Length: 121
Image (tube, rainbow, N blue to C red; front, side, top):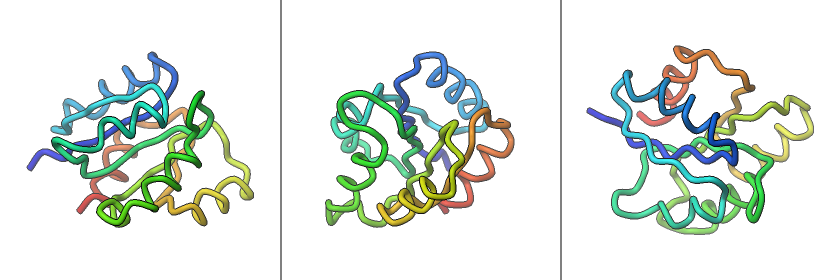
């Protein structure tokens, strides 16, 4: 079974690294450059999990998480934060907004794959 991941990051390099880590593991990866663009990628097909950075233009990760949790059909969608930030206060804020988990960049591909499989199943 192929899991569909929506990877949201304003860095093209990071989006490419995520795709390179997940595609060989059997994930179907779509990308968006920020939270606003991600909202356009939520249907047809709906992702199994969202992987988002926090610091992005237009709509940041916190705003994206809050918007996804406001939508009835997406409230149970797993959301992992992938960021360089590691402050406990930011983690707590993301958890309160509705994030499922947190991964600090740079990531180890195997750990990212395992984390996505764990939350999406």
